[in-house]
Amino acid sequence: MPELPDVEVFRQYLEATSLKQTIEKAEVREPSMVKSSSGSELSRSLKDRFFVSAVRQGKYLAAQLDNHSWLILHFGMTGYLQYFKDQDADTPHNRLKLLFKNRHCLIYDCRRKLGQIRLIKDLEAFWRSADCGPDVLNNLDAQGFIQRLSGRRGQIKSALMDQSLFCGIGNIYSDEILFQTGIHPKTPVKKLDPQDMRRLYSRMIHVLEKAVQVQADPKQMPDKWLIPRREKGQTCPVCGASLERIRASGRGSWICPGCQKL
DNA sequence: AGCACTGTTGGATA
DNA sequence: ATATCCAACAGTGC
Picture 1: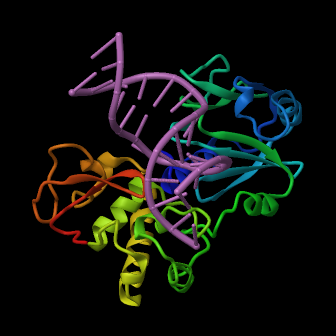
Picture 2: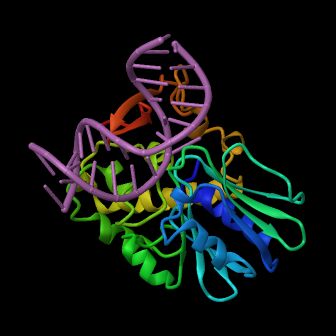
Picture 3: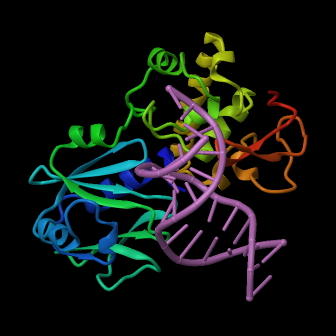
């Protein structure tokens, strides 16, 4: 799940459910996922704090605490948040549970443990240390997008997914953006002209905003999209050709062989 | 049963 | 600078 739209939905969810409630207890159920100091240190630091806001940078969620430190969550491939009004609630792969004074709780669940949990002081310093480029939705205009893309050597898909160039796009959404622009994922970036790049940028923004609008739920995405059809036997919603799965940038990639010529 | 596959990243290697 | 392969992990499907 968790690419930019999913994480944006988590951010909005956290803001809607969990602000201004004092954390009575933080249960670190999987200390190995805590990448800043230790699990017990994290637990001590969260106690008696409360969230004041949440921001997102690419696929990272940063929740600010009242003492100006930040809880940073990365969701790996399988992470999500769930809020409960029952303090005894649990989820199948609960890795961090925040129990609030009002007896509600927020759980960070991450089945495959590929996510990361941190508590940090300096947000900007963390983005730099994580080698995060500008967020594609919050901090990147068409000009910046084109500037960062031009001069790149490799294939367009790997550029779109390179979090240090600009961040937020992963495997699923890069396929969607390329499908909607009729560009093959293996196209060398240097083969794209400024016109192509402008189209790429505007489709990218459109796809990501629309995805956030529908809560990143494939069932609610437009009929003409690729995402709900990423499986064997499906056909292109535009030309009717059989969709194909290829390997590009080391990832399984779905394309329409009719619409996306190399 | 065994193997390949899966929305993440990060490191080693070429 | 960029690509590929592997690892981390846990679950599902063939």
